[in-house]
Amino acid sequence: MPHRKSKNVFRLTARFDALIETHAQLEAEIAQEQGRPLPDLSRLNRLKRLKLQAKDEAASIEALLRVLGHGQAQRTGLSLSQRT
Image 1 (tube, rainbow, N blue to C red):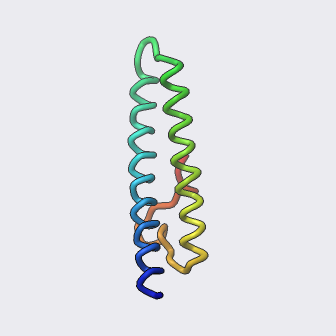
Image 2 (cartoon, rainbow, N blue to C red):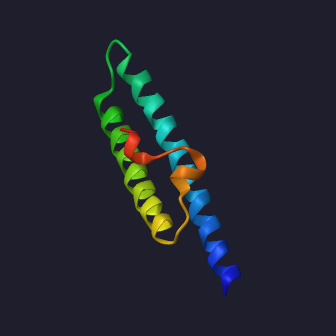
């Protein structure tokens, strides 16, 4: 049973890391779109919605990892609470 738990923690950690990366990429895309002379408001809204979804999911995983005793934010130095 411990093997299964560690496998699940690994999957959660990998998903958390992927969401952090997605969040950063979306942040860059939003900044780029906002820098255009005539930003596409529809695209901006979609990107912001996706960024918020990534943040919410990552925050849920981060909380779950803390409950399980695996400080993901401490391990990577990343924390969603420090991000926008």
